[in-house]
Image 1: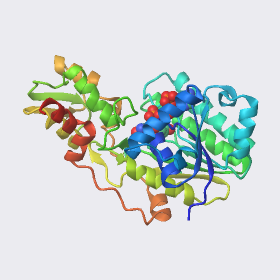
Image 2: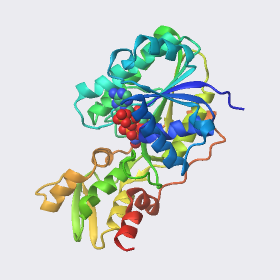
Image 3: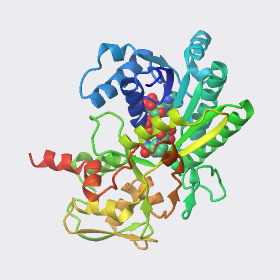
Length: 371
Ligand SMILES: NC(=O)c1ccc[n+]([C@@H]2O[C@H](COP(=O)([O-])OP(=O)(O)OC[C@H]3O[C@@H](n4cnc5c(N)ncnc54)[C@H](OP(=O)(O)O)[C@@H]3O)[C@@H](O)[C@H]2O)c1
């Protein structure tokens, strides 16, 4: 039986965060306070829209009454809460799920640090104020491994000797380092969850947070003009051939995260878990999904793009950072945590071209173009 907790969740308006909220509030029956930007009423409106979309209908009153919304901001002292709200929140919180982050891959490091590092510090301050009974779960990313291309990344590993592909990775790395120091200083347990790139083949309504593949599909279809519309023949892309990317279905990731947070040992120290797919997705498969939409198009990965044609320059500028930067990776991630703590959770199926096409929104786009 799940013990009902009073949970504080940050990032509930996000792609992953809204699904975590749904699982904690609707599936698990917890009391959840979400802290986010805008007035409390605006925040509630956004969060309820996400939940309604996920549920496929309105929230029952019994569920809505367990949802509380608090206007706050990670970048402000005391999370932007007035002192009385801050102490009341700390007094009633038995667990914190910190999912909020600025996930723009190449925003300036100083601005990413404000949200991702200083913001995490403020969440930990609240956990300290709430006392030892308050369990902390922080969502990080598998990409804290930075520029390391090969080998198996251990769950205990937190190493910056390879450098970083993006300022985002660096900021999340620094946040994890901060979490480790905090747990050691205060002799407290913290669960750190590291998902890889999240994907889904079901599409949130327009205006709701999207996953990176849906963004990629929308970006290339914007204004009805697909990036490769009418293009046939070879188009070179600047990414080393043979690369693979770890992409994991968000529905599986959420189930895994809930089990890991509930089952992680509660003695002091940080427990870090990769929430990744057991099988990497070849970048070639993702490119095949794109090619399938444009008969005659042949996307070719090349280590260096010399004398690019106009369409090659456009493609290099339009393809998302995560694909261009991570397409050269051949590394894998240790998964012993999930295998030990959640042996009852079936592995997600490997991604195939049809799944990636659906995630890119191609089925919907075709249905729209040819009713
Ligand atoms: N999406 C992925 O593929 C992926 C992969 C690996 C790891 N992750 C990690 O998973 C977590 C959740 O990601 P996501 O996909 O849900 O991201 P997302 O869709 O971009 O959502 C980010 C969330 O953080 C909130 N936030 C940002 N700045 C804030 C601030 N200053 N104060 C308060 N809230 C703030 C956003 O609120 P607003 O709505 O107000 O902007 C939103 O709720 C992050 O920690 C991310 O690093 C994500």
